[in-house]
Image (cartoon, rainbow, N blue to C red):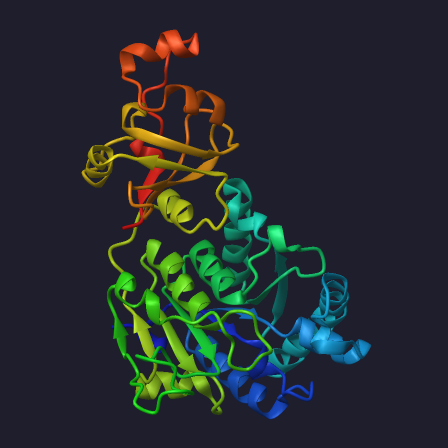
Length: 370
């Protein structure tokens, strides 16, 4: 079972509504208790990575922007650029009081979707942690657009935990876990303390943020668990509003813990955690069974192609019912893939005009998602 104190390398995500009060003021007294928790973990030899929201909220207050800086993309980017320096300074000052050096890493979706950049981020995190530094990560909202952004720091935190090879991920939230129903609307809703099957609870996750300040909601937290689970990382949703939230979780275990299955290889964990794909490949029932048995995807089993992908791009694999079953790096451009879909291997050379590759998606470049 996952416990905060048992993780040698821990990633902690802090949401906007925990850092910033509705009026726009920093919740300094609470933040000092969280930093005290981090300092205690640091002193005990635990390495901590922080993923911190709050830049847009802080920047919009400084710039006096309407709607919390989210009226339009330009306002959000300006607020992020202004607020990020405030946020970084705040963390650096509070951690510095405990003799801890903070480092800032601003990242975008592409830093984790591209394999080489993912490995670069991983190496940077590794070196900072080896130097006793606490890295503070946030999405670079000053340049990100809707098409190239995480959109919430829950999923960013899961990818960061993957990159850092964390032993655990804690999502500090304005709610203390996943419930059987929305506790704000249903007094009979019950906390779910442990989740071992994400597919069984996907329908319970709301996209809404109860504070109105963040962008994730419970849906993003369940998605974060899916991403982290590919690397075998347990995830906990924990109440962040009380003082000393990490110490409180370590002592009580109160929250929802998502228990991961056995981890995938590092490359397949990265592939499973991708958020951007360039197309979709639909397969027949026989191909779906073959994939579940560990086989490669052959052209003969493909019944549909969507998208304008290139060879080496990531694509989703769907079964006949439209259910996502796998993700992989495709061996053909979309045009050639459409030309050979459903065809036997003997016909491929004539159709393509060149010797065919061994598979539409090779098993070494494919990860099952169900």
